[in-house]
Length: 609
Image 1 (spheres, rainbow, N blue to C red):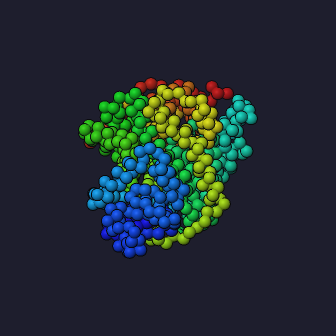
Image 2: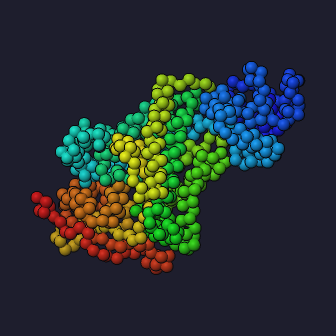
Image 3: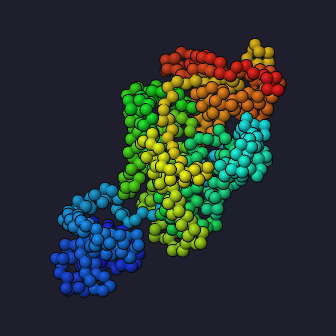
C-alpha cells in the first residue's frame, strides 16, 4: 500500500489499516517508493492510494483499500461487494474522490469523531475494570442479602424457602426443578443459605482481585440465581435480573486464566463485548421507550418529576431538596432523562468521541438518580456497564496513569477455555439476539403478540434470567400510600414498628442506604399499591411479629415489644407527601401524612391456630 506521507488524513487512516492487516500488507509513502515503481506516475500517487498485490496488479483509490483489507476475513465482504453488488463500486469511488479532494475537511471530521487515533478500538483496560466493578456489585448484593436472609427466607423468616419449594414441588412435580433452577432444591437449610451468601462474598472478592475470573463468574451466577429463585418476591427486582444477565454474559468476556496479568491477557471476545454493549443499549432504550408507550401522560407533558421525588419507594434527603425546585426545572429534567434514555444510546455504536459523550451523559444521569433515590446497586451496575464504552486509546492518552496497553501487550494464544468461551458467546448471540430484538420492539409496541417461534425459545431460557425486559417507572405513581404496622398488648394502646429506611415518623429525614437494599422496606412500598390479600407475605409478617421471631424483628429499626411479643397486630394506610420548604421551616417535619384506612385488620395468633 503506497500513500501520501504529507497528508495528515492519510497518516491517520493508514495507521488504522496497518492495525487491521497486522503485518500482511506492507505500507510505504510514495515519497519513498515512487522510484521503485516508475510505471506509476507521481500524479497518480498524489491523487489516490495505490495497492500492489502479490501478482503485481495495481489498484487505486477505494478499490485499493478494499483489496488490501481482504487479508482479514471480517473485511473480505468489502472487496466482494465492490465486485458483485450493483452500485457499490461507483458510490465507493465517488465518496473516495470527494474525501481525497477535501482532505483538510476529512481530517477535521476524523479528529472530531475519533480524535488523533482512528485505529480499531481495543478494550483490555475496560474489560479489566468492568470485571472488577462487576465483582464489587456482586459483593454488595451478597452482603446486603446476607444480613437480611434469616428474616426474609430462612426457616424463621417471612417466607421460608423450604416451605415455598415444597409447595412448588407438590404443584409442579418433576418440572419444578427446570422452572425454578436453584441449588436450594438440594439443600434449603438456613446453613446452606448462609453458605450461598458467604460463598458469593468470597467469589466476589476473587473476581475483584482478578483470580480465576471466568470460573468465579460461573459460580457467582449459579449462586445468585439460586438465591434469586429462593428469595421469591423479595428478590424479584429489575436490578436482580440485570445483575444475573450481566453476570452471565460476562462469563464469555472474562479471561480463562488463573491470574491474568496486565500485558498477557487473551484477546477481548468481540461477541461477548457486543452482548454486554447490547445489554446496556437495551436497558437504556427500553427504560425510556416504555415511559412514552405506557399511556401515562405525565411523561409526555414532562410532569413526571412533579410526583417522582416524593412518591418513589425510598427517597433520599436530596429528593426533598430536589422537590423544591421550580416546575420548569423539573420539566427540563424529565426531557433530559428521556433524551438520555432513548436517543443517547444510539451513540454507543458510533466513533470514539460521540461514544464517550454518550457514556458521560448516561453516567451523569445515573449519578443524578442515585443522589435522589435509593436504588440499591442498580446505578452502580449501569455505570459499570458504561466502562465498556471507554476504549484503550483513552487510557493511552494518560501515560502518567496507565502504560499504553497496545504498545506493551504480548501476543497470547487463546486457550481451550478461551476458545470455548468465544464460541459460546456466538451461540448466545444466535439464541438471544432475536429475543432481545423483540423485547426492544415490544417496548415500542407493547400490544404486539409474540411470534410462536420466539415464545418457545423464551420459555426455555426465561427461568435463567439471561434475556430480560427492563423499564422502571413506566407508569408514575401519583400518590404515596405508606403502610404502618402496629402492635398492641391489649388492643387499646398501639405501638408502631418503625422501619429502618421506609418513611414512618414524619420528623425523621429520608435516609441514604444505597447500595444496600432493605428488601422488606422496598416490598412494603409495593404492598401499599394493592391489598393484603394480593400480598400474602404481609400476613406471614404479622404472624412472625405475633410470635416475636427475632430474625424478623431485626429487619425493623426497633422492636417496640422487646420483652414480650404483642397480642395483636394491625396495619394502617397513610397518605404521605413531602413538606414544603415553608412547612419544614415551621415544624421541622420532612413529611406530612393523613390517615386513610385500615390495611390489615387486627389479627392475633388465635386466628391462625
